[in-house]
Image (cartoon, rainbow, N blue to C red; front, side):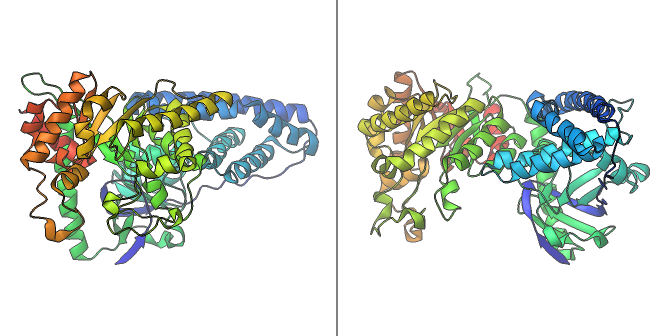
Length: 559
């Protein structure tokens, strides 16, 4: 057995035979031409044809996966129609007297290099996009087939030159595809009935190809690099799209374990098919919104795969924990914006950084504390180091122009803390207005209720914010005076304690008195033994791990 570690792109398990796709040859001959105008006309005609092909592909993707997933190909069409792109191609034709194919390839390389050199991961991803659309124009110029079949599907180069030629279409078998790289347009055209999973040598988890793989529900791993080996063709493999692990020629123990996991996943999928699109509503008509908790932008795929209604807790501190230096405004904007776009109209509630206690970061240079759970953490850091806080707030506000983002403040103990945070938020808004940067002026702001103080002050806090979300992990810790990091206190730290449940009840009642909604985003929300209690207390929302959404929905609908 050979074990390869790649980067997780799309969750799921695939077990099957490997089919290695040969890289498509995009070599273009450089030819000197006598009539630059005729060559420009060739380019313009080819570009128009490519735009029409992308329109067809866009419509196909929209029909199968929804309008928001088809927006990528609208962006591709706009890229082809961009005056700067056309000017670059035509300038090369006119000045260097080269053929249109070579000019398109040269222009693509120039634009791709420019995008790749940018700090923004969103802009870096455009390097692959400009190569993709340029390749399409080159195909038209070279007379390569990219036609619409009778069933309305568009066949791209990788589909024709790879999957079909390697026998997948002819013999009817399904395979795990190994390929050096795959363009977004080719990924969208993969026949899911013939493809079990996808492994690429190049690429990133934030690329459009990765997003499309997640949309298609295709287990996928990227970034295996030099471990990519064409000799794997025909061998049996297991891929774990959650961990990023690839097992070529797996041993019997590995096969048995992954068959078991796959069976569990299929059972979960059966529940998804049964409940997808159905509301979490009791038989008596009581409605609860079911959201999911995430820690990284890539987790949004699991939220959608499990049909959650939104993200109830995006733990933004992981953007800080996984770096060795401060995450810039642009880096954070990319992360928040990516999730907002991927979630479409669904709510995305982002908790501002909750560093401290059990989550320490070296570059914050925090002093040692004997009891960090009661120390300098979360909102206390943000309010005493506003230069850090404002960077995050600006990124959140900018990202709010791309989706349904709300801001949530952790570890609140007083009304003054909320007012101070809102003042810094208003400063950030004012700066962005002055810079003419778009954001959602009416972005919602909420607080986490996770201290006894915030429960006692819930009526006053409710007058300041748009929603409450109860963090039951810390609320249990602080209510029962039990350090949740201390295993010897486990028997005393009972989250089912009447004291904790009464705190939750008081919070819900205060929220409803003031006309705002109240949810739970802690582990207790997924405790099916308490679902009946939460329904009786009138909870409005439960945010749980993505895989807990469907079992919870099933219990609520049968209540």
